[in-house]
Structure formats: structure tokens, C-alpha cells
Amino acid sequence: MSATKLKILKGYDFHCHFRRPVVKTAVELTAECFCGAVAMGNTDPPIAIADDALLYEREIRAALPFGCAFQPIMTIMLTKMTTPQIVIDAARRGIKVVKYIPEGVSVNSKESVALEKLSDYFPVLEAMQENDMVFSGHWESLHDSKGRELEELDREEAAIPFLDKVVKTFPTLRIVAEHASTKKLIDYVRQSPLNLRATLTMHHALLTFCNVCSEPGVITNPYNYCKPIAKTEEDRQAVERAMVSGDPHFFPGSDMAPHPLSAKQKIPPVAGIFCPGKIFVPLMLEIFLANNALQNLSNFYENFGAEFYGLPKSLESLELTQEDWTVPPEYDGIVPFMAGQTLHWKVAD
Ligand code: NCD
Ligand code: ZN
Ligand code: ZN
Image (cartoon, rainbow, N blue to C red):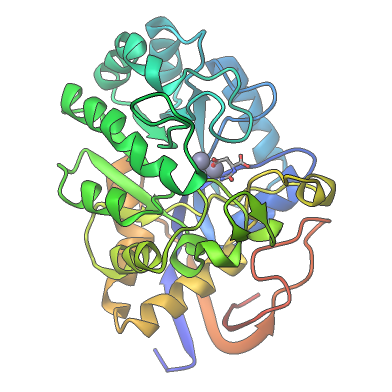
């Protein structure tokens, strides 16, 4: 390995949205840098049963370049209609993940179960636990314990008691706290048993609230706007530290969420940051280098998540070169994270 080149094995992206009408672009950009990805099912309508997931998998595979070994990891959504039987059927047919967004909390979640009602669905979670599925969730609460509506900044912390109840009730269920964005959630995950993990994004390791909003509710940069919203400098540092720490509780999930310009430019904009692998991987490398933590990169990127999910390690490698390049203004009409900015490492073509 020279200072200007780095070869690493491809890892998985444990949080992706392959959204119409840009499924092909999103899949291609992901497959360039990852050997597989969890394809979140919050489409409209949602991926609710195994049949939906298997059809969606065909659509994703059809978008892959010829001969590409990329592995889509399929999900079904926890909706108000989900039963233990639906979960058992999905598990038998190879679906690995049940994805949860509490009702009304993020994109395409109106058919989801409200966080306050989650315990009504514990028989469904029991079926996940018995059938060895992963329960991957977006942990934010719209309300505090007295029912008052919360600012976006406070929603993740308010969901921790609900997550804790799941963790305590299902000690062998594999649970993921997606896109952890607060020191509170990071600390909670770190001290939890290893059946709870968290995925981390690059944007939460790099942005704070002032890169998104001028004040609560006033979004000044819609391309940096996602749920959960970027928070304080202390929270940002907690994400960065967890990422480079070598702690197996944490692994990558880009939350690559493409939305068309029209949806990003309306007020309020739709939530979602488009950070495909080409951008995610160089940013990740820069963060590990800046923290003198290169020795922990392969565990974060290649190992911890794959081991937790029981997935094979990739045989393909990825080459990065130390070379400045400018993130393009768009990919297929979608404005990416860091558009127009210079990154110092590049995924070799
Ligand atoms: C995601 C999307 O667009 O589906 N948006 C986001 O802001 N993160 C949904 C999600 O992961 O919450
Ligand atoms: Zn989410
Ligand atoms: Zn997401």
C-alpha cells in the first residue's frame, strides 16, 4: 500500500433507498462501491409482504450491470397489517429484515405502526426473533411522554425508551438503530448488548444543525435535510468517534435517499440525503485518516455489519486513489451530498 493508493475489500451498505424513477442510477452507484445493500421497503406503496419484496428484488437485480455480484438484501415494512404469519412467510422465502419507521416520522410511513402502539405488535417481533430476522428501525418520536409535539432536534432522544423496551423484551432479536445522530443514542447503543447495533451515515458525522437550518423549522439547505436532522457539534463528534472507534456496535448505512429536484425544492422539502458509495466511501476514508484510525476501517466497513447480518465477506476489492475531484452537481437529476465540493480521495474507475 502506498500513501496515494488504498485497496480494500468491498463492504455492505446497510441502509439504502432504491427509489423510482432512479432505481437504475441508485443501484449502479451503490454496486460500484458495495458488495450488497439493504434495500429499504418504504416505497409507495410499501413493501409489505414477501411477494412485494421478491418483485422489488427482481427490479433491483435488473438494474445491475451485467455480471455484477451485488447482493440486494430485502426487507418488508412493519405496517398496521403485519402479522406473525407474514413475518414467518417472509423469513422462509429469504427476506432477512423487517424495517420499521414509526407512523408519520419519515418518508412514506403513513401505513406504519405508531411508536406508542409498537408494543401491540410484539407478537410480530416475537416471530422475527424466532425466525432470526433483523429488526431495523428509524428511532424517532414525534411526541414527548406528555403527548406534546417535539422539535426535530429532540425526536431521536425521545424514542430511546421505546427502543429500550424492545431491547429488554427481545434479548435475542437482532435490532438495528438506523442513522444514529445523537450522543444520547450512540451512548445507549454502546452500552447495550451486541444484539443491538447502530448504522452510521457520513452526513451525521460531518453536518450540524446549522448546515441545514437557520432556526428550527427554517430549512436553508434542503440537500442537507434528512431525518433524523443533523444536530449539535457534540452529537456530530459522537457519531464520528463511534465510527472510528473499532466498537462492533457500529457499521455503515449510507441512508442514500434520492428525491427529485421538485421534491427537494418545495417548502418544506422532502427529507433525504443522496450520498451514494462514490461519495460515501471517500468521505469515510477521510474521516478514518483524520482520526488516525485506519487500522479500524476494515472492521467498520467490511466486517462488523456482515458478521451481524450473517453475510459472506466480499471477494471483490475497491481501489481508492488520493486525488482531488469535485462532486458533480447531479446524478440523473438528483443532487448529491457535497455537490460541487472537493473530495480528496476517489474511487478508481
Ligand atoms: C429516507 C427516505 O427518503 O426514504 N429519508 C430520510 O430523510 N432519511 C427515510 C429514512 O431513512 O428515514
Ligand atoms: Zn430513517
Ligand atoms: Zn433511510
